[in-house]
Length: 144
Picture 1: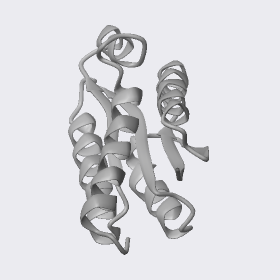
Picture 2: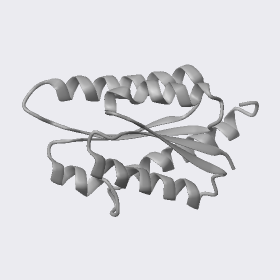
Picture 3: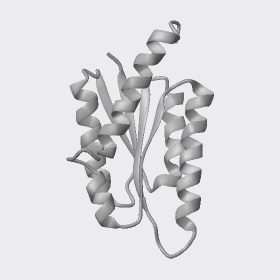
Picture 4: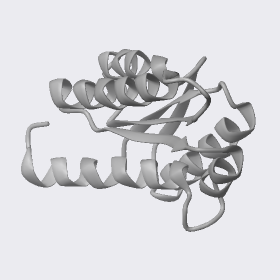
């Protein structure tokens, strides 16, 4: 099994802790050799953090986690869109799976419902997606 990275925006600390815990537990349950967690201030910084993790060549995949809660301005739209685009750019340009586990919600209640524990566990889902892509990569790209 491989090592995995989690990069997480910690603007909403309570949510970040829940997302990190569930993603870590998912990687560990799958038999990961190790899981390293790297924190950044917010979701906008996730693509760069993912790129740094990928560039280190230590990780088979990166789960990108965080939360953006809609406010009264258009800031939400810019942060969500650019974080998603940036994370996708990293994985497509490098071939290393980087998943988008960022909560993009209207309010804190929605965020808490999706931050861990139930069927809407974004941390777990992001880690599961990394594991699925790594398995697919091993099947289809034998020299990766």
